[in-house]
Length: 293
Image (cartoon, rainbow, N blue to C red; front, top):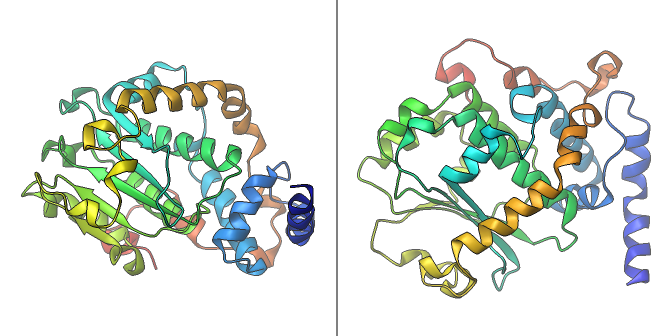
């Protein structure tokens, strides 16, 4: 293991050296996170640099989603109660990490889209800054069983745009598949919200699965799923409690992160500008104007 650590230290040295010389970017970045950027960018140094810059820039342009993130706050605890965000304990035979996201409560009266996205990003941060066992790819699964047409009225389009841009452009993961299960007959109307922000290469990864079918398990082994889905990785509540405890244990990091990971735009070199950050901010316009390049 020491040899492997030395190898990683040497590989990441140019990236760390570059980061230390960027006056506008935060320098206090976990090594495991830098390794994720390097691997997700196929060890292409210049691509990793651009992605790191965009990662911090987009976060700084969205304080509504990346500031005041207290896992003990009433808003975040309510998200824990009404949703299930489940990184599954076991990976696929291809070494892919699988996630399940679903509404636990079909009653959307207490559903706040901004709080849900903020909590989702907290979950991502917990994983990418703490887990050394980096998967070869990621597979999100969205369970639409409790999603009604009422959900459309709950979606904040500005937040949706930020969510789609950040997850597609800046998060250091390799997306391998996307599944939507238990799709209702009106899933097309809900999916239409996302289409203007969806990159074509991501859209090609999405598969829809109707209720009471097992087509999902053609792509992913049933054994790695929770008991409620016919698998053997424990119950949904067990997995969920584990992740809530991990996020709560990271509370000080989340609160301190408001000040740590901030981009100083006034110090940005003129050759490091990216217009994606401007699109992340709240600007008026039609869906066409807001669509990703």
